[in-house]
Amino acid sequence: MKSMLLFLFASATIATTQAQNFADAEQVMLNNQKSLGDDQALVIYKDGKILHQKMLGDFRANIQAPIGESSQWLTAALVMIMVQEGKLSLDDNVGKYLPIFPKWMKGYITIRHCLSHTTGIEAEKQGAGKLFQKKSFTTLEEEVNYYAEKRAIANNPGVWFQYDQIGPSIAGRVLEVITKKKFDRLAQEKLFRPLNMRVTSFSNYTSAISPFDGAKSSALEYTNFLSMLLNKGLFNGKQILTEASVAELMKIQTGEALNKSTPAFMNGFSYGLGTWLETKDGTVINCVSQNSPFVWIDYCRGYACILLTKKERSLLKRDLYDQLKTAVDAQLKSSCK
Image 1 (cartoon, one colour):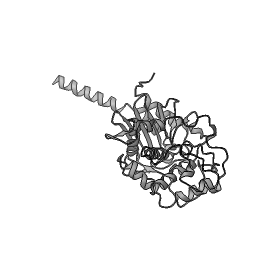
Image 2 (tube, helix red, strand yellow):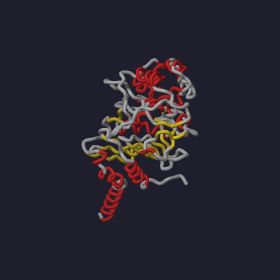
Image 3 (cartoon, rainbow, N blue to C red):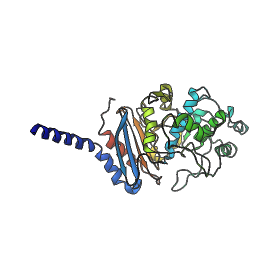
Image 4 (tube, helix red, strand yellow):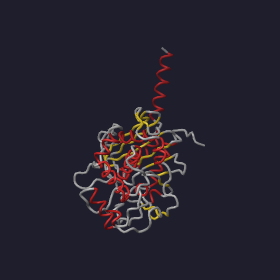
């Protein structure tokens, strides 16, 4: 009996310790409900399984919510799938697929320029309380034609880095042309279904879809995508992206480009293809959104994490992200020196 009591006490102690592992991360969520909202879902993935979940309010990790700029990571992955299938090359000129661009002297912009925000096309206006002021369009084709016709080339492609929705939208339209399918349908067929992302969608029934920031997903489903990248493109035994494709996403793509426009939230990060690199060697990558979610992969510690809120928020501060990542990192040992 005494041995049994000791065993039960030890088991209870271990369980309590495990439950408190990410108490500091949960406290970041609680302390910042004014900024993040009452409804939040945190998911941490490591070693082939969900390591930890925490939900606040009436939000759940399987409920769909807007994912903002984290959408472009999905777009970049979808482009890489088309590259793997031989449908296009990252260094193809967009004029090869979109004749309207050569007509307006923009045909030499490449797919790589589009995914690395180095197209050189004049930026959209920024406004108070919003990252980007967007003109209303009914289709992605209409939007991209507008960039070709109405937006000037402010500098040669590759000369400067300018973070906005223009490049990802052009890349998305190229995929529509080469596959003869709408972007959201293509994403479902080639990316979301293979990753068991059943509630994830780019669909928008009131205006043009946005490959930059228009997707909706759940914390658990986006974790499927993160786990694929963490596991070198492999998901449930199926190679979604090749190791080479994952490496290309994580490679700094901006070269010597001048930093024309980077939101303060991302200061100090480098840029790959649809991907922010927190470290130059790509051991920590993210596709955080300034209004939700916070999402990143740490290859040194072997985990992925997402904090998703039920609604998009007003622009969030970088220190919130840093607090959360520091709290999670503290519980997981790094294999990097």
